[in-house]
Image (cartoon, rainbow, N blue to C red; front, side, top):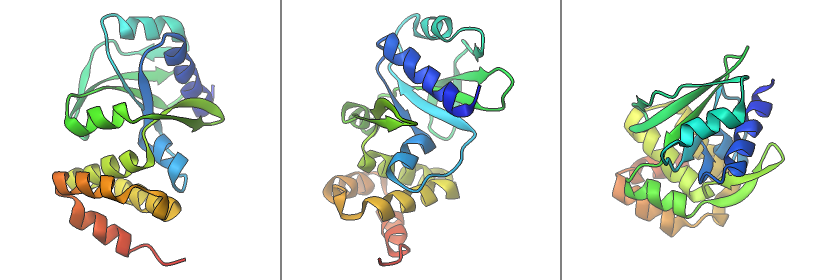
Amino acid sequence: MSDDEATLAVIDALEDLAIPYMVVGSFSSNVYGIPRSTQDADFVIQLEPQTIDRIAARLGPDFQVDRQMSFEMATMTSRHEIRVSGSPFKIELFHLSDRPHDQERFRRRCRGQVQGRDTWLPTAEDVVITKLNWAHRIGRSKDADDVKNVLAVQGDALDWDYIHSWADRHGTRALLDEIRRSIPPL
């Protein structure tokens, strides 16, 4: 099973089970920016009792679902990992947190395409805000690169007032401005 097939299988499972979710991480930044390769697929889900058991049953034996919740340091969120048989590719199911921006980006999620499949995604603005926050807090260069690529592709189509309001709240406005200045003019 390819990485894309595994990701689509999880999308199908979440859709079939009517579990509220959105595809995040590099898959979402690839939709709005310049695609890059990745070794995982990230989802944010609303977790209810038995959600993980239902997902595991729906996915079947090609997927090993870790029913034990773990804490992810980069996002400061609880998660479950799914391993794909015979592949180093993994899928992470992050629990929707109660942090204000996490709640807002989930509320604003929209339908879009990942690998030709209709799915739930954060808005381009929320991808920028989240990746900007991670780049600031963790210092991962790939997150700053993702911000730059989304800004370069989306440009004036973005709701800059919305982005600025969250960047100001998160203390990431200086980094946002620095990244914007680094984008060469067209």
